[in-house]
Length: 189
Image 1 (cartoon, rainbow, N blue to C red):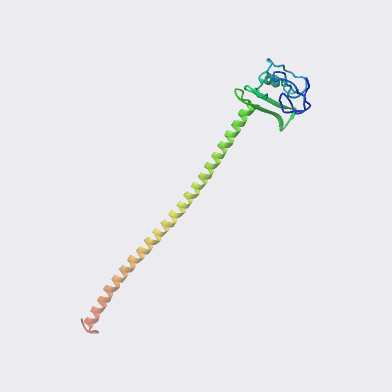
Image 2: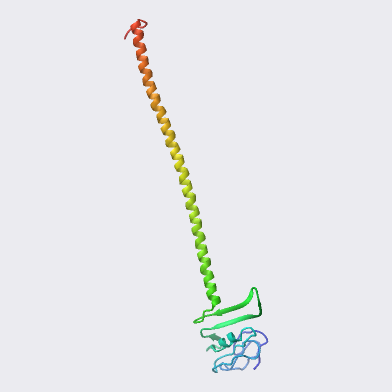
């Protein structure tokens, strides 16, 4: 069997002709060196293992099948691609579907949920800040109203005192007039 030089489109007749003439029931190498796993049936392809995680490739090979259109499909697939020398930021990329959910996917879902929760929490904080600002505004407005009421109270008290003073002045004026009439200073009414 001819092993493709690089990763290529997997069909029974690959673009470079390496698989030309193969039937859909024959083994098709996806990439790599001599396949680490052999198919369990004539319609299954082969996944080669890397030095990092041969077990994952072997497990993936057991469920790799050729569909009616000669495209490769997976049943509850687990496809793992790993760096030969993983370093920070260069670990494994795992894609899964169906029954197999990887820890990496669960971690991504948890991260997405955490980010959604964080966003919701930030939105709540923003709403709380707006409410707090409104409470401060209402408190300021209440102080203004209280001041107006106080000023009105002071003004009202001053008006009442003024009316009282005017009434007292009228009384004094009437008494003065009466005294002047009595003394003959002015003609009586």
